[in-house]
Length: 179
Image 1 (cartoon, rainbow, N blue to C red):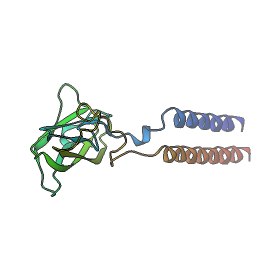
Image 2 (cartoon, rainbow, N blue to C red):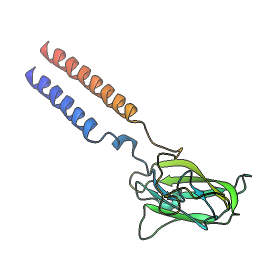
Image 3 (cartoon, rainbow, N blue to C red):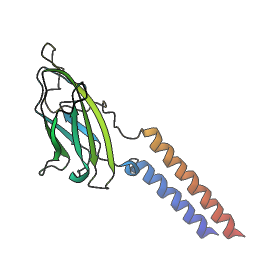
């Protein structure tokens, strides 16, 4: 009886430690980390290359970037290519004019766990605009990606539900072995 109770307690403690130490493990995907141009950037000239850096290394077979102009016409040239020297980075060439809005749609396949993930963001090109600060260089996603991940409260809720189920199982096993 005490042995089952000890195992139940150990399982609860292990579950709590894992839930607190690595809350995103169950939700691992290659998500957007930064982009050039950045989400919501305002540029004075159209870029010729879109570069996105992800949180995990990418599998080329399931990863791509497609760029569309404001009329919905594809302006990216070819398929997005994963950088051979940095598997977290993918680029695609594009052609556009200097007065349009653009949508960047990306699909990533994690080399770590094989999970696919999709997201999108936009940027604007206007000759008359003042470029937005920090958006002509490496650019950060700034949370503007629409593809984006699992909120912390969902991760915590799933962890707590796991703890409740584990506790219920431990109580059941303890009472069962007592009889």
